Amino acid sequence: MDSNVRQAGIAQAALGYAITALGACLVLLAGDFGVPPEALAWLPATFGFGLLAMAPAGPLLLRSSPRPALIGGSLAVAGGSTLLALAPAPGVAVAGASASGPGACPGTAMSGRVQ
Image (tube, rainbow, N blue to C red; front, top):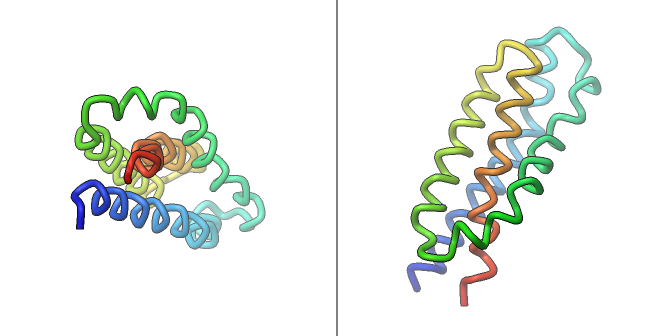
């Protein structure tokens, strides 16, 4: 298997896991924050907003090599997910989900480069 194909597959799998995990966290976060789950229904959208905000920079990040962008993106997703999981308040949860979106951008942009 080509190295680029492997890297793109790993990036897409990690992105799918992170997005899916956001939905499962809503009920737990709502209980932690003492609010009904529907009050946090907008939280996964913050991931999408971060992804959209970073999307124009994706091709620039991948010009030389996908490795630095994928490493940085993976660290951003991991950091954002950790922040989301340990959030003591809704604002911190929003920050964590928002940090995960830009982190996912390099993996998403790289998928178009794999041949």
